[in-house]
Each structure stands twice: as C-alpha cells, then as structure tokens.
Image (cartoon, rainbow, N blue to C red):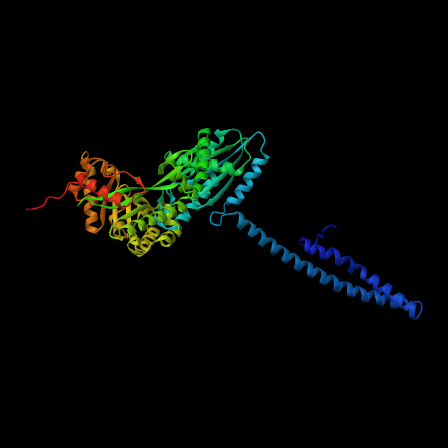
Length: 532
C-alpha cells in the first residue's frame, strides 16, 4: 500500500494507518447495516430517523477510532525515529574513531574490500602512516596534548587528500588513506607527498602559543591484480617500516624487493611462532668478570634460535620481527623461565656460588603486565630466587619513565636486580637515574671501543663511572675486546666487564665451567699489588 502523506513516514506508523483508517471510514455504514438488520428481524422495516441516528452514532465512533489510530501512529513514528537515531549513532560509533571522527579500521577494511571488488582498469592504493616519535609527545606533554596533535593531524589529512578518498584512524598515531581510481603509482606517490608535507610543514600549536613539529612516515601499497585487503594492508605496513628505517618523515612505495622480504618475514614469523613450543630457542651465556679480583660474578643470557633449516640464528635475525609481531612477550617468558631453571641448577650444585644471570627485557615486555607474572611464576626459592638481573635499555627507560619505574620497582620488591643497558647512548639525565630503582649501569660498547684511542670516549666512561659510584650503583663495561680497553677500565675504577677478551657466549654452562673460566680470567686481569 502507498504511504500516507500527511504524517512522518515510518513503517510502524504507516502500518497502523493503512490497517485502521479504512475500517474506521467504513464503520458508520457497517453500523447502519447492523441496525437495519436488527430492525427487520424485530419490528419490520426501519425508519429513516432510526437509520440516520445509527449512522450518526457510527460516525462518532469512527471519529474516535480515527483519532486513537492517528495518535498511535504518531507515537510509533516518534519511537521509530528515536530508535533509528540510536541505531545510526551506534553504527557510527562502531565504525568511527570518537576522537577524530575519522573512520576506524573496520570501516576502512570494508571500503577497501568494496574498492578492490569494483575496480576495473584503474588501480587503488593504501597509504599507511604513523607519526614519528609520537610517544615522546604523550610522555613529555601529556595525553591531552597528544589528543590535540591527533585531531590536528586528522584535519590536515582530510585537507591533503581528494574528497573521494577515505581517511581512517587505526588507533594510537596510526592512520590510513584509501585512494581509488588512480592511473599509476605516480599519483599515489604525489598524494603521499602531499600528506607528508601537510603535516611536516607547519608545527602544531597547543597551550599558550607552544608548538610541536610533527613528521609522518608513510608506506604505500598499490593494488593492481590482487583482491586481498589484508595483503594490501600488510604491504603498506612493510613499506611504512622501510620508510622508518630510511630516515622517517618520508614515504616509501612497496616494491618487489619488499615483496620478497615480506614473504621471508611472514615465513620467519610463522616459524618463530612454533619455536618456543618446539624447543628451538637457546640461551648462550657470556661471563661477566669482576675487575677487582678477576672472579666470575655472573653471566648475561643471550638469545639464539636453532632454526631447523637455517641453523643457529643471532638475535638480529629474528628479535626485531618478534618485537613487531608481539611474539617477543612469549619469547621473553621462556627466557625468564629458562634463566630461573639454570640458576636453580647452579645453586643446587653449589649453594654458595653467588652467580647471577642477566636477561634483556624489551619495550613490549616492560609494557606488558604479564612480565611480573612471568618472573613470579617461575621464581625459585632460596638464594637462586635473588640472582636474576633484568636489563632494560636506557632509551626505553627515558621513553616510558612512569611505567618503567613502577614495573622496575615491583621487580626490586620481588628480589630481582635491575640494570640499565647501553648506558651513554641515550639521552637520560642524572635526575632520571636518581629516581630509578637500579643496581647497575652497563656502559655502551661504543665508548668502550674507543678506550685507548679516543680521549673523548675515555672521558665519557670516566664520567659515567664517577656518577654511578656517587649514586652507589655498580658499573659494567660491555664489549671488551682488547687488553688496552681492559687496562683503561681498571685504571678508571670500573667494577666489572664482559666481552670476547674475557669469554665468549657458550651454551649450557654450569658452575664448574664458570670456575674454570674464572681461573683463566684471573690471568687476563692484572691482580692488585700486595703491600709489604
């Protein structure tokens, strides 16, 4: 039936009108007919007056019925519009980012799938971007300023792309742009260049006239024959990663070389996901020597992967991939459990060995609440439970000082020692170190390599050692490879050292191995002179 034109159109209200109104209009005639039949049955032929009276009564009843029906229809119209607004709002909330009002990942993926399905000879491209160093904005200026930056970036993105392009925020500082009906990759590169310039050319203003210079890195993936949205997004992400490696504040187009690397990385990620379950990971241990008397005070656990086809892989071959994929969290749990197991074996064999094992913790591990659980669940009782040392890079501590402090403080409360790794290479200040719950600093190997050759490096190492001693913090030098470096460290008063000169990483060492190594280390390290 046709809709009724005099009221707001809605299915429920129209149903009431189309069903009730015709009956209401016909009801007076029905009433007259019923009265006439009754009169014939009882008294014979009805009079005109009786019929007019019946018609009047039916008309009154019909009017009342019409009024009630129309009121019900209007009420249903209002309720229907309200429900529709609620559904529209819920749908928009489900498909849009509440901060920037851009589409979210779900909306973007849906539009990308439709774009891939309907494209003909033209290509479409995905631009995947994030903001360089954005985490430092939140840490330094607070999340309110970070939100201001994200809103401003979203507005600039909308202005930089074409009206028909789709802009979305995937979360954090990650954005994506879908560009359809492109003739070639040059068009996509030009759009990406506009995007980079729109954000990088003007600082973002906040507060009382303060400014922030923000730059984006952009990865571009062009779709020609492929019809897989997830594959296109992975390619754009790979191109973004290459843009970051190439210096940031730039765009990179996914090419065949990246394709081969992406395939290799995907295969490596699949293999790595099985490495823990199938027992392919290994820990190699490098001794840390006390420079005061030459004894082995502990070891650093270095991760290796015994790949079934590629042989023994170094951390550089798989740890960055584990970081990006999130597998580093599970791998980190395994490393901690294995370190606890080794310590328990050592202290069972020699309760007075006094050895420690240092393990490195990554950014995602430090930010993950499961780190404390991983330490607590496998922690042995007795002296072995106080012999684990967690190493965190200086750069990581500066980038996330608040979260780092709380996590490291909790570790200290559990009896775990803490060291700052690669110290001197980052930008931490004395104020940072004074507030951090740490036991040791490890001098970055770059400065150790310059000992005996560059006075500036020796001055830096001397400054770090003096600062640490004033704070009551131990100092470990890493990367010692020559006797000149070793003699310089002794002269500067460094507490401990590790490196190829003092011992190479080896698998499955026990207390006896370390005691034998200690005798060799005593020969390498000059003994203090005995008076008399």
